[in-house]
Length: 416
Image (cartoon, rainbow, N blue to C red):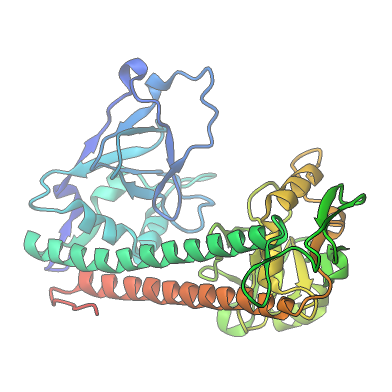
């Protein structure tokens, strides 16, 4: 054991409290991103007294590490008490004035800890990392003052990331509100900034749309506004995977998140395979939609680098006719979502029907000088969103690098 490293088992104690009397109803699981999430278990008719309680300030982890993205699912409970699967393991710091729980959670977030947990896992068909192995974890435990200082600096960056996410959310809400104002409520601003509803301000009933739209406005099928709508390569690509510096990024359904596309844990494929999959090749401004279930509504591929896609629907807008962000807003509108939901079907699981997307009808003014300006408005919003997202990734990289450095050393690290 390194001289400045301590055995974790000397500083923590196990917790194994049953949910006696079914007093706690909130059942949670833990993601491999190390946070508590809503459990997928159907609790109807289930005796919750057999589940284990996780109190505020306690740790819980899923000891099973097989098929978990080479990570261990562990989290510190900060919210109200909850219950977890009886197969989970719980523990807490014996003394918060000796080992700060948030400091310990920083250690668990390190990729090195995930690799250690996988290496120490054991089993045949399924591998497990249990409490006995957790006790043998070694880590530096400086003075409690130093621990709190490190946690404070870590949380400074975390809070900046959260502010960044809130800004992006506000930008998305603004874009969606503008779309509704101009393309649903038909209050399009004219040159004087006044609401515009066709040249004469009259509304006309459109039989095919079964709704009123302003005179001088029309609609197009979505496929007439796109260069291509197709399903990316579907099948096994394991044999084509390679190291990041040797290949091309491949975006999958798992890379589609609530915050947009995540480029943090991309798989890479060989250049040869990338060249063969022409229709799956991505360009900046393309929209991706997950084919299965309701997860992964349209996201914009907003990078300049070459990339490919796997088992998702790709929409390539004709930028001369339809701006990517404007189309993104349309696909997230209530009308489009209702239409898309009705197209889901499949015997085993819901599968999005590509033709239904192509058949979507997009309403917009045919002749107006403001249309170009409208494009620019949505382009500006998307540009700021891209900047915020890249700033978020830069902060996350800083968080990873600085936290690792702080944890490994007794030197104070100043984060600006």
